[in-house]
Image 1 (tube, rainbow, N blue to C red):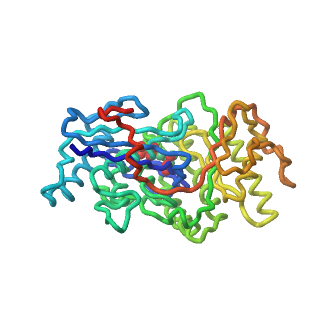
Image 2: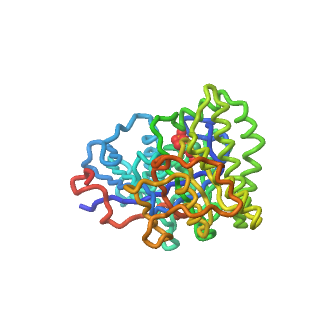
Length: 415
Ligand code: DP6
């Protein structure tokens, strides 16, 4: 008998205009629109295999090899229900011969190629990979969508499903620069992701992730943002008077490849997101002293660069944790790494993988600071304060992978 299965990978995205706050916590409808850059799956990705089989007695999910509970009425179940409905209404009800995959249980195995310990949010790529793999299994989309076989559900429609799993996941259905339009309908059908510009529009956009050592467990995004909605007056100002203008301005900056405006807006929005976290009762702190040192260093680098060339060099942004993501153009990454390793010396036991071959086989070393740079903006931290650097670039949306990449064995269990 035929095996019905599909394996896809999906990317991580990092927001420049942050999503923070829900107006509907079940449908995951946000209080403001947001915008992100999709990062390359060559370095960071979630991979998911989904298989439908009439012999499966239960629907099961394994995350990184460990079986997870599928809570009834939970986020995962809601995603599944929507995908089954699409399969039934758009394919099975129309083609009598199509196998009734929507009636069968499925086994899902998902794997992140980055350690959860790195502190990188995996819910966005995870739910995007889950949604795309089941959509591919159900014949709803071919990822990438091809003109040879028009898709039955577009990436924007599928972003509605991924959103039910985790808000930020809806933006990982596209590559490049992606907006999540907040929408206004109570049903949420207009709260979806759209492509602002593809990866190919600005391929020199790179990202450097500084993985900051973090011992304590922070407040989750889900509970933190609800507390902000309930208690922060500043959030209301942000929703009404700041984000709408910023969305417009950053979309224009992206279309015009205007890095200065892109960087200014990105840094301002990260700072305002952390300000509304501080304005929450009780306050929430996601950044630590290392994070703040990174801000000071990038601000100083930008000050010097602005004086010399009239342009900014880099933009920092921080999510619900202390890690920094630094956006910059490809030509500036080497210099930024050299400055970061000067202030945050790296352990020899943890060499920088240098995926873009910037350092000719050697490890990045501290070089003299640019002329006019005030070296006292930060202290030199102890080894391990920044425990790793990940250099990546802008990337594409979900990809269907070859049969051989399956994460499920012939027995239907994770390999
Ligand atoms: C700070 O998407 O993880 O990364 O919808 O509750 O699953 P849920 O939250 P989540 O929140 C992400 C918050 C953020 C900003 C962003 O990605 O826009």
